[in-house]
Image (cartoon, rainbow over all chains, first blue to last red):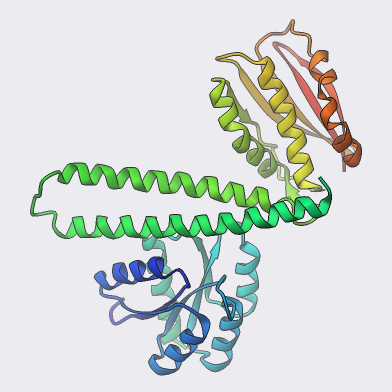
Length: 125
Length: 213
């Protein structure tokens, strides 16, 4: 999808910066945050339609970030990244209003497909 | 081990496995980036290009392998979280077979499980039942030889479930000796009110672990 902008939120810096680089190579404008507070600031400034959010992070947990995004930026669609064996988090996230959840390690093509769907949903309100 | 001790072991193992999986995820993305760059310069050749592609394939395969192992280890660690917990019988058998696969491979014994026809979920002390099934497989591995097969299956019975561990090698083997040797798990059997009995089928011998449900 053209003109897609996405925010990646993960405390694993090498992982998220490499993923961002791969998405940029595919013409997806990618912002990066390494913690929940930074993510919320970036969302307020940049208003990305899609956020890919790791559930397990130090400081504010991914699920608490999700709650705040749903309250303050309801049009933003959130895709959660959970560890395998942590489907409980994914299900909890869906109840809190996540667009969907994917399990790490995530395949790039699968993530892009999900991001496209989320972006479309965000545009359609 | 007390429940607090196993809970501690499980928690630490789960935490460290999670970190390990993050490492694998980073390696996976980094090698993926290298693959992307190779695609970009596919029209230009450089020394050892084919070798690079082969190496990246190896990295991808090993990352996938490491991820599977890490996921299984994390599941094993989480089996110590709650007692009892709900467990799908097929997933339970699959997990134990995976955990014991290395030991079977070392003896060149084929180890596999047969799933039930329909899904069946039981409420169980997952860590202990995994240990008991693994112990049964371990005892059968001691008796099995290169080229033999150990098959794990299960049977639903009224008020109980039986896990059947069969060595397909020698119908004349004395399997009662296997049961007598298993004194080191009597305590765990007692906790679960489970029992182990010899099992005889055509062309195979083994053990059955019977658990009330």
